[in-house]
Length: 155
Image 1 (cartoon, rainbow, N blue to C red):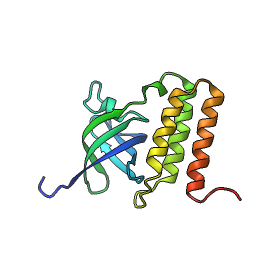
Image 2: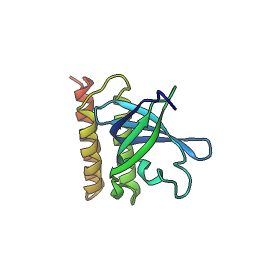
Image 3: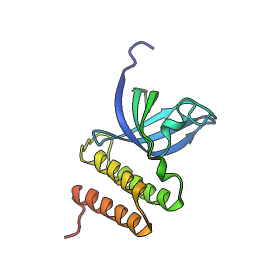
Image 4: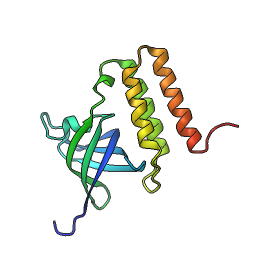
């Protein structure tokens, strides 16, 4: 397709929504701190080339093609899978809370370079946590830090 612009970005997968039988809509936190939404075609196919690269909480280098309403994932290269988050319910719950705070505090047209590294460190801390109290502390500290940065800290 002539005129179709592409761009590269490193991003954390915050959310996945089913689209049709084999596609996913991804909500991404880009390295510049902005939110992006993109379609990963065929990501739900068993053995699909994108399947493992667009799992929740993964940090991935994406090549995205600009579409009319949503961008389309052309290529994806896994950087950090955060695989330790998938083994236990408590870790999944903590990482989901981190991802939800990130999703609610980043915006498509308002990049904030503070957000992506802090989110990445929080996910890594959830992976390395030794018990439930540590997970709770990581989530609370992350939420407090991000909300304070956004100006929502209580006085």
